[in-house]
Image (tube, helix red, strand yellow):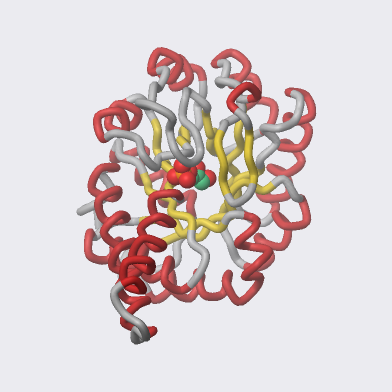
Length: 281
Ligand code: 13P
C-alpha cells in the first residue's frame, strides 16, 4: 500500500528501527524493492535521485506510485537530493509525499533560507521534508563532492538549523560517504550521540552502501531512522547483467532482467533485516 513517509518514520521512531530508502531507476529496481519488502514483511521507501526523476519523468513516478499502491506492505515514494524548487514542486504535484531539499552545498545562511522556503512549500502540500547540514563527499549519479570539500555536521548548528527551517528529518555527515569507502569506514559516533540529543527530528544517514553491520546497528541505536542505499543496488544490477551476458550469446531478455531483479532483491532483503524493519508488518 502507498503510505506517507511521515507515517513510516513515526512507526520507525516508535519501534527504534530504521527504514531503508532505495534509489531506483526503472521497473527492475522498483520490483526488487517491493518484492524484498513483501517477502521480509517490511516497510520501505522507493527513492528517486533528481537525475532519475528528470530522466524517467512522470512515467517513472507513476510506476513507483502504482507499485507502492499494489504492494502488500507499506511503501512510500521519495525525491532524493533535490536542489531545485521546480522539481520539488513537481514531485509534490505528482503525488510524492516526501522530498530531500539539498542545500548542503550552500553557505549556512543560504542553506537555511533555501530549506525554510522548501519546508513551507512541502508542508503546504501535506508533505515531509528531509534536509542536509554538513556536506557528504563521494559520487552519485555524476555528482561528485571531493573529500576536501566535505564537512561534518556540527551539533549546535544542527539544532539551530532544525529550529530555523522547520524540517521533519535531518541527513547528517559523520564520516559517511556516497559511493565507495576508501579504507574501512569511520563514523564519528560521539558526534552522532550529540546530534541525537540536540535535534528533535529523526536522523538520516546517506551512503549506507558498504557500511559494515556493526556500524549500522550502532548508528540506529543512536537515532538514525532512515538509511539510503544506492551503490550496492546498482552494482548488484550491473553485476548480474554482466555475468549473464558473459555466459550467453543471445540471452532471453526477460530471464536476464529477472536475474538482475533477484540480485537487487537479495541486497534489499539483507538491508531490511539489518535495519530492523523486517518483520514489522
Ligand atoms: P550509496 O550510493 O553510498 O549507497 O548512497 C546512497 C545515498 O545516500 C542516496 O542519497
